[in-house]
Amino acid sequence: MIELQQLWQKTLEMLGKEIPSTSFEMWIVPLVPHSFADNKLVLFSPHTFTSETVKLSYDNVFTKTISEIAGVPVTYEIVYSEELEEKFKKDSIKSEKTEQKKNINSFAESKYDGLKQMLSDCHLNTKYQFDNFVVGGYNKLAYGAAFGVAKGDADKRFNPLFIYGGSGLGKTHLLQAIGNYIFSKRKVRVKYVTTEEFLNDLLENLYHGVEKDTFTKGAEKNKRMTKFRQKYRDVDVLLIDDIQFIAGKARTEEELFNIFDALYQAGKQIVLTSDRLPSEIKGISERLKTRFEWGLMADIGIPDLETRMAIIKQLIAQDGKINLSLDVIEFLAAVYKNNIRELEGAFNKVCAYSSLYEETPTLELVKKAINYRENAHKVTAQTILDNVCRFYNTPCDEVIGSSRVANIAKVRKVAIYITRELLNETWQSIGQLVGGRKYSTVMYSYDEIKKELPINNELSDEINTLFNIINQL
Ligand code: ADP
Ligand code: MG
Image (cartoon, rainbow, N blue to C red; front, side, top):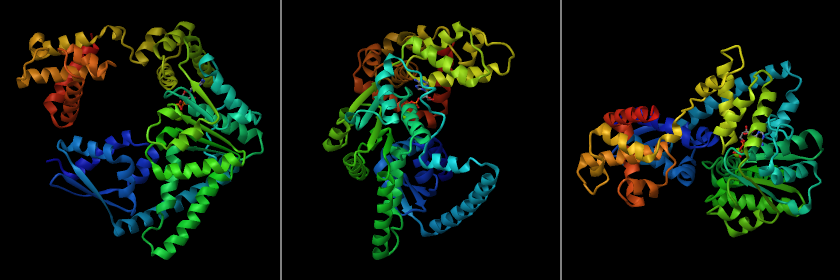
């Protein structure tokens, strides 16, 4: 059986990728593994309320991750430890003091500190401006509305402004640009917050001091909650990012609802972003959905090739050092179609790579930098299946046939797994490929391999070899 420390270490690594960083640091990192027996993991926490928070927000991913790593279904329990809390507090005081010292030093060094502090109170990052936001047909409406709100001359009917669109397409950029514009050009109060920060802020205030006696607790809690609410109500423009994360969090929703109404009735502007329409956010109340739809809903679609090229040119101008030829710009824009964050990531790789060489990067170099596979598009589900069968020396017709013999079933599962990982195929079409199998069967096979990989070295070696073979096709 996997050892306790090792289990927890691996769990941390994986959860770090799954849980948003602020929450991860706040709730998961302070946990200390206590025991692992009878497939139950017990963890100690320095906060009384970690167990509720984790159960409320991350129960599934938590259970799934530990089970995956342990290779068996595992349950968990988070237990508050007073001793740990004492230690935690001491450590925090220590680090606060060092932090204060650092702050004093940097204050002496920089006369801009006051301004920086104000910006960070509003949670704004000056990197995101209207000036460096490229406008095309796909984001024109969202841009226009955002700029109107920023200048303060938007129609009252634009309240709330609800900006929605896929990941990496500029929602946060626009929202932050509104904040930065207002911060630097107008004398009104603006606050940017992500839904995750809002949720953490609320939980911290709600549960702070729960271990005290009821009387002190009640009074203190009321005070804290009043302060919490004021913080979000005492603004003229409230910007909330990624509101879809509120789904299923009833208490957060209620607080947000009240803040929303208070601001709205006072004629203050609210701007929200989401990766989907209000009607598509499952698990939020009707009354909140309706409110999100009261104002203007502006979508951000997919940028066309020309706009993507303009974005690269904007990145070149911002970088100031790199020089890319038109065919390289067009190549990058053609490869990264649906996500500007990925396009930017590729551009940064090209910059890093080309800083090793003196001249303007050639198309060849760019392809190397982004690890571009010339024939990637030639890999089809059928090629994958053929290669997996050949690798295991098993006839393809048996693999797509009805046999349940273990080694044949294994080849089938591996083919399913690799196809799903490498190509963006639906379960249905993969099912079709492996002999017309059902959606649920295919999904189950995929899960089985995924679960077994971390605990079965032989299988993981085989699959890695297969990935290499297929990638070189
Ligand atoms: P989202 O919040 O929609 O997931 P972001 O706003 O974080 O996406 O955008 C991802 C990256 O792409 C950011 O670095 C952002 O500056 C950049 N970006 C997105 N849209 C544009 C645009 N129209 N012009 C310039 N940069 C953009
Ligand atoms: Mg975003």
